[in-house]
Image 1 (cartoon, rainbow over the protein chains, first blue to last red):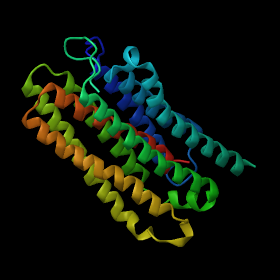
Image 2 (image 1 turned 30 degrees about the horizontal axis):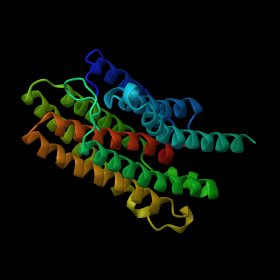
Image 3 (image 1 turned 45 degrees about the horizontal axis):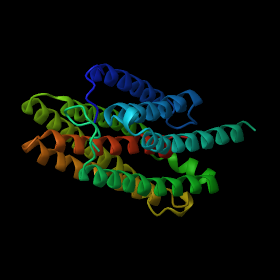
Image 4 (image 1 turned 90 degrees about the vertical axis):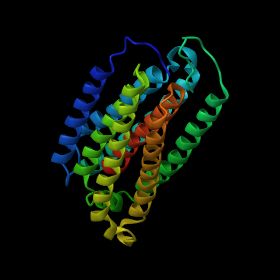
Length: 96
Length: 181
């Protein structure tokens, strides 16, 4: 856990929730159609940003255990990239 | 975990090791399940795309907000100086976790009829296993947070808040993998 008090959590929460609101609204608009890539990018980005804040700041691994931080960050990043790759394949497949 | 203790010095504790083992066992278990889902979605792209149209993306999107709010309260509980604030933040985080579970059950009510439908090539079986496994973690950790709120010591709050964030991150990964694309 990190004791740095200069991290303004409410501000970060507002940013994350704003991105999530926009992502959810965009996702809801396209419920029965293929989602645009921008919606994908926002939701996948949200997962990575949240993971990064939690792992580096909340868990305090930025300075103490950088290798562990990288391994933890790799987990959501891997699945985010796999989901993005599948979406891109589906989009190109539909277009072609 | 709690790599940096209250005094600001770095210390290892037995609790750290157990927490890391717990965190990684969760990430490996969810990783295997999500990997299986991704492989199957590559093998059966048409049926998986068709099955996703039957999921309720609006409720899942709203639930994502609920869980993010809960995660924020858990982080605030860990930062709070007074025991009372810590306790209130933990109870708030647990309540939002239970709200997540309630919304998820509403969502399940509309999706259960598709379970076992052969046209979707095991999509809903994997969907219920993965989201159900995650839901069980949310409910269990919500109960643990209520127990910890009774004796809101800093080390216990840090431990439960860390696990809560991990489960939060798992949902943020499940959401795009299962609902989108």
